[in-house]
Length: 400
Image 1: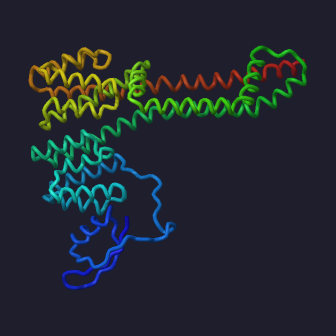
Image 2 (image 1 turned 180 degrees about the vertical axis):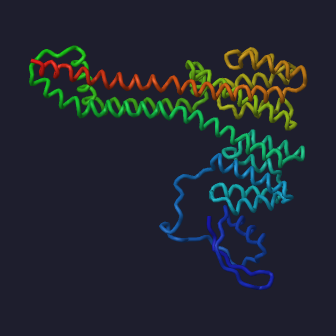
Image 3 (image 1 turned 45 degrees about the vertical axis):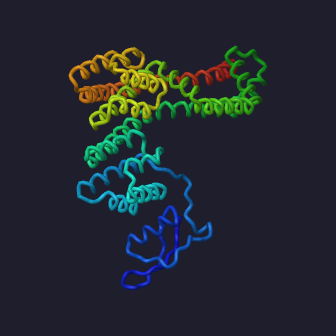
């Protein structure tokens, strides 16, 4: 929100202007922090057409990465936490994020720990992020932790971008196929049908099937579209439930090729997060609990939760996770056994991460190399088959 203010400096000079803050109290605190004695403060009542319209609000991963890096640099420069947060809130362009950072600075100034203030925004700062900041506060290495978090989030972002990029090409080809099919079914085939019917000749079975499909799509297309839309809507609603998420997560892991790629991604994420939390000084049980919260897959979340309970009873992580070979491959459990025996579990887990990064890159490249020719053949087969079914009777007619 924006507030119009009037105040005086220590020298008695009048200052009039506008300030942006999350609340009236936040605006007063901000102005007083700049050495002003407030004499008048009111919310800006500009007409709606003069206000800035925010269509998409939210905080991106890039915003959090930049925030972490800049805060880490300011720490190393001996700038206090409160001052660093206020400086960053003043220069952040994302209004939503600006207000959150300013509110965090207010809480820290009031005596709340930095990690507890961050925990109030779970959609921006994940449990993993908050746990790492808490470990940095305890160990006195908050600057190093923030710098690592920025690097960690960048790696996660690049991995996610790489997976999404791998899906762009097949999605584009399928979109072209659907567009061409719709064009032929609703415009091309009906016109050619009139020509074929005027010949009076017996049409081949493939041609009759194509013409029948075209008639069916034009007559019932809207109803089919509505039914498919309803099915997609209910599937999305079902996926948002705990039972639905478990079913979808389990299904995706069983898809050939794609399932193996997802398993490597989840095992790599689990290994890196757990290694970081352990090296940051968190107890193994708490580290497992935090890691399970950021996995993003219910199958892995359930296995890690059981491992946490087993570790609390005195069992080893490798023993429990070894009971889930469909989720954690033997190479992972064997290396985890070595890490537990030598007391270097965090180092061994990072070695696993390095191994799977290369495997993930290789798998994505292999999938792309396999999908491209298959999709081209599929596109050519569908369009070519339809055109052959329609044009073959016309060619026979012209040959007589």
